[in-house]
Length: 272
Image (cartoon, rainbow, N blue to C red; front, side):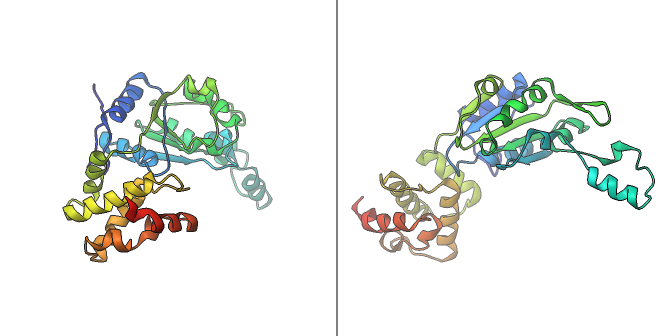
């Protein structure tokens, strides 16, 4: 497959994830990525851009974000201000149209990777309001009567933490992939992309504690991949002897972030 995505030196993807990305690119459909926090959903878009040598445009979604924000904004306030002070060109409305992230991706002279990050943070109508634009790769600017069409169809990656159910009409237009939490073999490979010289016994003991904590039923916030990577770095920087990792849980606040979880971990960790 031409223009195929592959793992990079900073991002290790499973075979299933590689296949999903490349199918989405080939079919020219948005790729919807779900998975628990810390499994690399957002980093995937950067990895795809790096692997394919393309620019990454990021549209971070918030609870107040509207679909219109990604298309364009008409700055009426600036136009009014300029008019009051006699600025030239006030009659040219196009001067006051600013493209949003989707508009930037459409107008790019080269194909880009567009990340729509955490789409489920917005209201329920947000995904539906983007159906036309993502299908037809165009939108209309009413103030200037101009249609903005994508010069090159962007590679669209959409992430969701499953905080809300997304509309069926939106899901039908996407390729879907759920990033499973890495098994130990894949996790070791991921860690070694960041710290290739990490001492093997330290890595094994830290991962053993990490997966034991994740297996505790009463834990409210399970530690994520990114937190394991940070913890291993802290253990290396602190020069912690391997034998102290399980006994003393040094720098445990890097992977356990809630008081009640910390109490559970300290009580149970040596029972495994």
